[in-house]
Image (cartoon, rainbow, N blue to C red; front, side, top):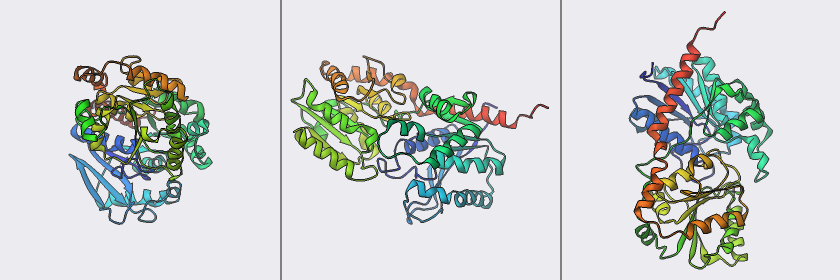
Length: 411
């Protein structure tokens, strides 16, 4: 059973996994899906990822690697629409998958859905195909609402997630925190939730030499503080900006902010206005969207990477930064505590109060200039999070789910 080749249908209805990273609905989940699918393909499994057409120029099928393909299906308008509007098109999307499956004579062992909209579809496919549906929520609406930051998630999402959490066959959660959220807020049975962390592409994210990276990016001799993520309230970027004037080493520093605007340009305007009010415009650089393959240069150039979020499901940025040998200061969200070695590869702060962030950033900036050996030591701390390792664990979870699903019900 352990070596059985699996045929996996992955679902990512609202977000195209190969869309532009850092835009409104394309972030860590898209990285997760493409990297995990590719790693499962390398292990010899077959993976079909289903998403809706987001652009009239989308081809129906894209090969993403060995035994991995991305399939676009029409559901609603052939354009990007608000993710809540996708809900009304879920029956069409479900029927589209079934039609494609029949046309191409496909059979699947596992349905693996991502986010609540996809999980809704997964429940129907489980019934139609008599195949176990495993889901991963990536973020939880109820937990997001508790932060009180940004727009409230609608009741439709909360109620649907609650029903899915209680009734779906199996759930993968990336952290113990996420598992607790599912149990406490949605009444999910604890025994049907497995914890499998996210991974990092160690081939892409690796140290490239700090001085060289700074030179190539034109960052001179400044100490570089890096933020990577969508520009939206839940990321706590305002808190990070407010921490800059509080730094002891506030003279030769540069805060580099990488990310696309979230739901509106308003947040970016607010941040620029705040920089003006604090008189630190010369210390903050907004780089906008940066392609994934250019990120290692930024991580390598940085002296510290900061995750100032109010909420993260996992927080891939921490893994990417550490893989590039750069220490991290992060709020106590997602996988921060399990990924960061306190005082060694960074610090976890209780919250994103500016003085808390500033205190720990200062501690890292005051360390002697790191060399390639210290960068490699930091990188070594996350070597177990390679996507191949994570894919092996996920495949075992699928095998277990499949065996359990197929087991005869005792009378």
